[in-house]
Length: 97
Image (cartoon, rainbow, N blue to C red):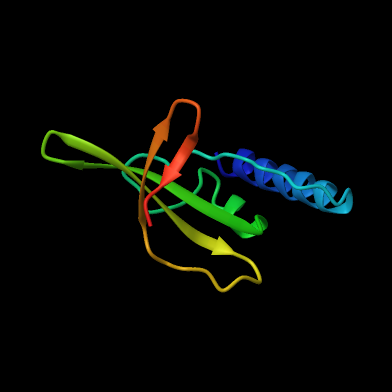
């Protein structure tokens, strides 16, 4: 319920603050809830993060493709365009620009 979500939000804030104090680079993943326009399950992760990169699976008929866009990158003037990408063995994520 609401109390549980508030506890989770407080925990996440403490976690992000602790990592920032350690001056480390942290990569965290979060699943976007199906059927929503939100970027996170608890509604706080994207506000705490310095950067948010969204990976999407797009369906056009029977064909699926992947795209990536930078939703937020604090202090950086970045493109808002979505870019197609593939995952290749030995190369990782390959973005088409």
